[in-house]
Image (cartoon, rainbow, N blue to C red; front, side, top):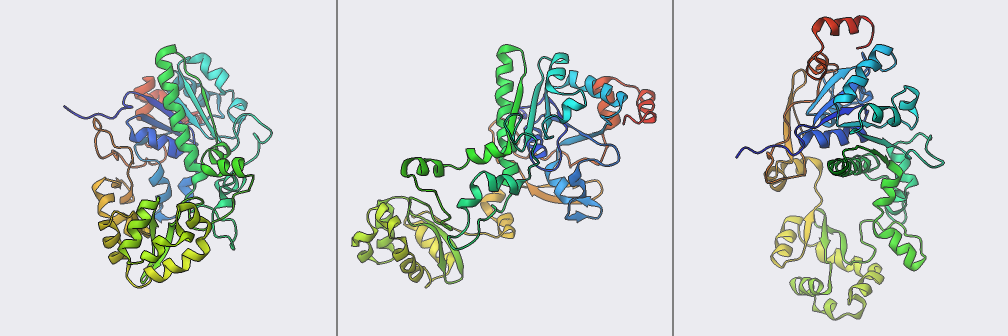
Length: 398
């Protein structure tokens, strides 16, 4: 039986720019949705101008917009809005990441569009959402990482609050946005009606604070930066081997006993400072230099082989080049190649969602050139002739 992508047959109009919205749209496209990227004529998505570049093409843009089609449309012109409204009638999902009120000013807000297509799912990803006192504030990834608390618990105690290396302010909003869209699709099967999905980047940062909120609520103590270690499991941190740092994750007392036996330190297993787990956590300042001395005598590869043979979870701290070569990553098709018509072949992360009845590789087509599919999409979805399309171009609609 031929494997198919689960979202085949769904049409998404993607008005979003830069990262949060495009990443959400890419996740839907990877799952088979037909994602039509609506871009400003002559300019396009802002990220087309972000480096690094392959020739004149942005690798940043290409990595976030695969499997999409590009249509240029001037939403500030009457004719352009008319074409857009007709496209909305054919769409299942509208995705945007404008500041609240932007689409309303164009006469294209949810209340209006839902009247022309009652099944439309209108997904709005923004910095602070459509309600609340901050709704009109500008937001960027580092802003919401700071405001949402994640920076206050990231970094070392004697260092500065630290931004997480990946843009999780944008990416978590993209992923929660995709979850909201899929939930709305499921409910539409029952009600026949779409709805608005309102996802705020700041909300998403609060949602991923994990046990930091629980710790504060229970203890009354404000969580602080702990470096690489876990607040309540020890040792669960980076340790220095003879040729660099690696990760060890001893999550319970049984594993601690196994570790002590492996390294021949039965004295540590019997030391009341380090058993049970809470004692190890409370006495990390004493345990850390002991572990550094133990691990410093061998290279990472030898430690990983020994620890894994004893069932102790561990791993290297890979640089990006090593991640791309990791046999597990390669085996799971997590690095795929896209062949762009101008930039040529470029590798990028694949999809982490693996499904038994879907193809293993998700990259079906490269990120589009600006306006590459305008004629094709308008002809396919709206049955416009080439003369009609050229007429719209002449009026500045496309």
